Image 1 (tube, helix red, strand yellow):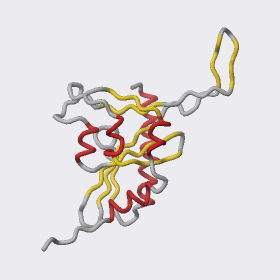
Image 2 (image 1 turned 180 degrees about the horizontal axis):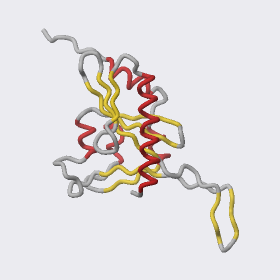
Image 3 (image 1 turned 45 degrees about the vertical axis):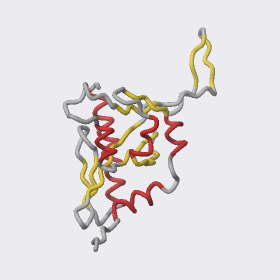
Length: 163
């Protein structure tokens, strides 16, 4: 990743963090940088919810060249990179598997639109121990319009004492 790409990614991640801070004003929202899980939301009980931000470089391409002629109206979906390779990671578990085990979420940013999914819901699309390039339309197909309410339910849920 070049320096310009890192600066752009950092700006997008900070924008997501600002959004999360506004949505969860009574929680502690931390931005962890580009390494590891990007965001952590800690509720009043100390329960943490982990979030990973994924951004799409190219949402729609307006045209392409075909033998010197530009054809417009053609679209090409962008892709999200979700890496499940263990041999490339310094950890014993891949980031995706770690997020699934922690009941974490992915926050997807296409242009400046956000939507989220629990990591467990996209596991069906992930090939184990591979780098996965998931097209945005496949992910959008499974996401719920009420994703923010579901995330808030998870963050604010209280644990009742077992008898």
